[in-house]
Every structure is written in structure tokens, then in C-alpha cells.
Length: 137
Image 1 (spheres, helix red, strand yellow):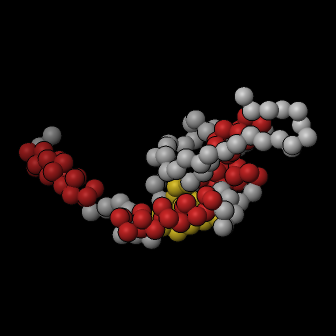
Image 2 (image 1 turned 180 degrees about the vertical axis):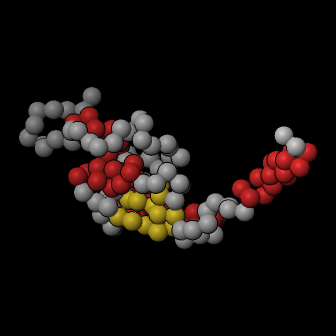
């Protein structure tokens, strides 16, 4: 390699971080997919989280409700989104654990998602009709 070639290569190496830094994330709105209809608990939580995210990152966070099949349809949309960080999802155990255990889904909950954070815990109860001879222990 000539001296001129080495200098050019060195200059390119020095400028690489500047070029990378020129495209800061996020440079455009974030799409937050909620795999449930508008107005439900997941939607309300997503809107609160989306508003705070928008304030922190100074980019709009667009809520995209994709209800259907107990959260499977919207969760699948997250799995198939471009891996650029501009599409995220807020989901529940139904589409990540329950549905995949009971039916064939188009995504693998272990391989197709990277968890970001636990947003909220919701207490749930197992109940039966009062005429069933079951009792709490």
C-alpha cells in the first residue's frame, strides 16, 4: 500500500465515528404496536408510556393498535418489523406465553423478541362460578 493509500485509510478510520454519530437514534417517529384494541389496559398503558418516551427522546411515539387473536396478530407485526428499533411492541403474557403454548403462531417468543423492560404488573385471578364445588385454600 502506498503512503497516500495509508493516509486515506487512516483518515477514513478517523472519520468513521463522525459519520456514525451524524445519524443519531431516533431520527424519526417510533411506532409502538399494541396488539389489542384501543381503550383496553394495554392501550392505556402504551399511551402513558408512549407520551413519556416521546418527551424523553423528542420524537413522536405513534400508537398502532393491532388487535386480534388474543394479541397474536399485533405481536406478529412486531416480530416482522424491520430490525431498526423504530417499531416496538407492548404486550402481555397472552401473546408471548399462552397463545404459543396453545396454538401455532408465526413467531418464536424466545428468538424473535428482545425484552426492553417490564412496564407494569397486573394482578389476575382464577375464578369459577359459585355453583362449582371448588374453594380457595
